[in-house]
Image 1 (spheres, rainbow, N blue to C red):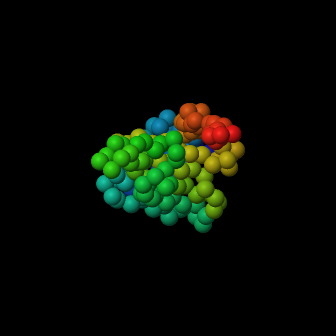
Image 2 (image 1 turned 135 degrees about the vertical axis):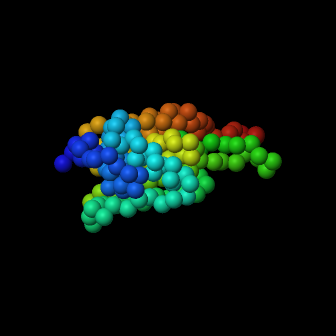
Image 3 (image 1 turned 60 degrees about the vertical axis):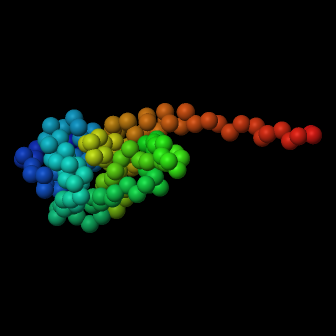
Length: 162
């Protein structure tokens, strides 16, 4: 069953329609599916205001959505860590304030990072990429760009007198 077909065939959803939002966030690119944009944006706004992720009674065992707040930088993807200058030095912060993890058949499928401004980026698992065949690659591209900018370790310093 196609996620796109389910999302496209759904009746107009209320923000509390957790099943539609779950399907949308598991889709290759929810921003391109007209039926997904309003409910996902509403849920992201709700999350930004401290409300929980809506439930989906039809999700079935092994299928769920879990919303977590980003706690500092320990769970932030490295490509989205920024440094702010403070009185005590440089402080790392995450561009995103939370993440919604979609689990299908008991396995992680996608993780959608969200910010208070409404920006999102989705990390697709290997299983999701295999099943979907195509996906929004922004997360992967951002990571590859970040990785290419990292300074490779240089040779060890020369010891004096050697």
